[in-house]
Every structure is written in C-alpha cells, then in structure tokens.
Image (cartoon, rainbow, N blue to C red; front, side, top):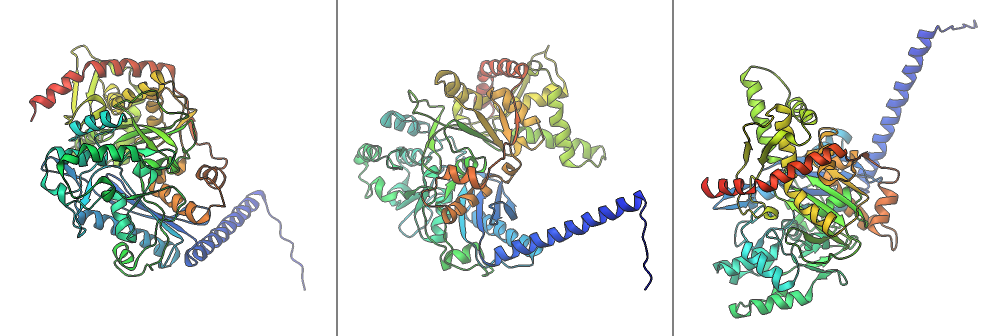
Length: 563
C-alpha cells in the first residue's frame, strides 16, 4: 500500500485550522443544545415572568441560572376617567402571550414542548390598587403606580404613621377611596397588587414577597411583615366609618425570598397556558415587584449597593446601613426581597417624552423617503447628547407625561422651553432631554447623599435608558456623581430577576442567604462595565438642575392653563 505524504503551505494550514475550529464549535454547540434539552425535559429550569409598564417578558433559566429562552408582549396603559389603568383582559392576554412566546422559543430552539419546570415566579410593576369583593370580583379598574391622585391620603397617613407613604402605595389608594366616600369600599374583601393578583389566581394563595409588600404598607424590619402598630393606627383612624372589615381582613400574607409560596393549580396552569401543555403542581416563589427583581438582576441586595432602573419611569434603590434620621416625602422606604431596608427614589417620568421626540425625528426621515432603521436613529440622536454643552446650553425641558410627586405635581404637561440667547443645537436639545429625564430623580438623591450622607460604592444600571452604549451611563453618572456599572445580563431585566428568585427557592443551600446565592452562583467574577463620573459633566448637570428647579413654576403654569 502506497504511503502518500501531504504537504501543507501556510494558507492551507490556516484554512485547515479554521475548519477544525468551525467543526469543534459546531460540536460544542450541539453538545450545549443537547445538555439544555435534558435540563428542560427533566424540569431542572425556572421561569420568571414580569409585567412591566410597556412590556411583559417571560424568561426560562437553565441549571446555571442564565437565560436559555424568552418571550415577550408589548402593551400600554390607558388613561380612562382620569385613571391610568390596564384592563383585566389585557393583563391576562399579556401574561398568556408572553408565556406562549416563551414556549414557542423553546420549541424552535430545542424542539421541545414545556411540560413542567422547577419553579415559577411572577413579578410586576409595584404599588397600585386592586380590590375585590367576597366573590372575587374586581370592584374598580386597576389603579396603577402612575396615578398621583392620593395626595390627601398620602399626607395624612405619613403624619399618622410618622413614616413616608407615597401616593403610589396601595394603602394610600385605599385611604383616598375612603376619604372620597367611594361606594365600593364597604364591599372590599381583599386588596392586593398586580403581582399579588396574578399569583393568587395561579396558586390560590393570597401572599406578597416582602419587597413587593413594602410598597403596599410599611414593613416591620424585625418581623419582616406588615407593621402591626401602624395597622392598629389605621383601624382606629377609620373606625368611625363602621365598615364590616378591619385592615387585617384585607391584606395578604408577607413572605421573604426563598420561602415556598404555593403551587400552580390546575386552574392556574390553564390560565397561564390555555393550550393545556403545562402541568399543575409546579412550586411558585413569592410574587415580587419590579424594584425587588431589579435589585436581584443587578446583584444589589447588600448594604452600600444600589441600582437604578430607568425606562418609562426611573427609580434608584440604595440598601441602607441604618434608618434615615427623619421622614422625607420625596423618599420611599422599602425592602430587598430578603427584607433589608432600602431607600428608594422614584420618579414617574423618564424616557417617555424623549421617545416621543425621537418618534418625531423618525417621522421626518420617513417623510424624506429615507429608509433608516429605528435603532440607528435612536443611537445617532442619543450619541449627539455627548457633543452638547455640559449644562445643555441654557435649554430646559420637563418630560412630565404624568404627575411627579417629588416635585409636587399631580398632573404633567411635557414642556420644552429656552431663552432667546440659549445655544439651541441638536446636541444640546438631546442632552436636555436626557438630563430632564433624571431631574426629579436628582431631587431625591440629593437628600440621600447630601443631607443623610448615605454612602454607596457603586450604582448598577439597567433598563432602556442604558441601551445606547455609554450614553445612559454617562448621563446617569453626571446626575448621581457616582460610578455607574452596566452588566450585560442586566439587559434581561426583572423577568430574569424573578426567575432567579424562583431558582433560589428550590436550589439554595441550607441557611444560604440571597446575597450569597447571587454572589457565588450568579455573579461570581462579573464586575460589569463601570463608568466613573466626569467632573465637567457633574458640574454641568448641577447647573442644569438649578435651572430645572427654578423653572418648576413654568411647568405649574402649563398644568394650570393647558387643560
């Protein structure tokens, strides 16, 4: 038999090497897919679903707790009879569609039908008002966090409890309905949040995770449940109304991260998956709010850590070393999903107004007959903000689509204004839009950082505000004067966060804390892309913020005169 000797020149050797890499990569990918299929078939996954203000997202995580499939559904709130709301029909349509798209994604990628999973978690935008009668009928349309209609209740309860009660909180909505003498109040048998409502319907359990519960009614940090002293004070406050209920009759139970919070019932399985593939009996973790899942998704549950979620609204969460020295109406006191005290600065308005301006530019390019992808228009305009004058050249805007409690507005009027001599350029205009979206947030953070001397080592960002690389980070660093990091995984958002909480419930070691679970099993070695604040940007934002504060009477005049 002849022996043939092959001789490779350098080009042939390079091609051969690359071919080996391709083959090896394909083999590795096939093995990864095969491994994931085994995990899905054996139910060693977890599913998280979060109902945000503009998108509902479902995420499935594998054994390593990182996403292996997802699905989503876009939706919008409605403004009906002076109330920001979502209908029950839209709530269930959105939940079912996002799950259905997750199931489709699993089918397309792995050729499998979801039958079961290790655990499920439900999350949603916090606060708001959902009340039901003894027949489980919703008594009034869902009142979301966006409604600033409980000013009197918020003020009176804050004074009664000596504790901040923002207008968004469920208890503020209940008390305002009492003050308004609304007919439905006497019929209430149960009051919950959006996440609590869905969890109740899926499991039959009337519970809230402690983080979600902390935006419903004040929490006792020792018991990690609702504050009994304040419950008694509330009951005494409304005793003259002679209702046939006390607050204890209406409220859900409170649970901390890691506790089992019921199982998916037969009814719940059909509600979530009308196609009938998903099996009942799946454990479910306590339902949490988007603030808590944001903390989890950014590993910000330990003292001196913080995160900022910026999208339709913007809120910053700082885990405190100790309680604040006094009550501030601009600040919420809530908790992590594990029950540790957190100061939250919540602004109702963030990206909505500059999204509207960018849509105007998109219309302009379409009118010119130009075929430019929307992401390119977004990135191009947002990058222009980096070229603007540090203080925005004297321009000013208020992106108040809705009211803004931090600055004292029950209603909003989006507004752009400039002086005759201002430096009116595209770069300054876009920079103004970004700075304005953080104006109310800055007002709250000044209290934390300057008056209370709260320390934070790093703030981790997530949400649509950070989608254009570097721009959102740079603007946020200027507003907070703190290092801002963004992790790639943070893009998965709260749906991933609640999936992690579901996984924590079934996979945690004995006595393992949530922070240890996240540090060791999820975020080990991940630092994220950190951006330090630029002193020139910080000074520019401070100058802009002074103008923003002085211009608030202009916004008030717009609200008063543009009806």
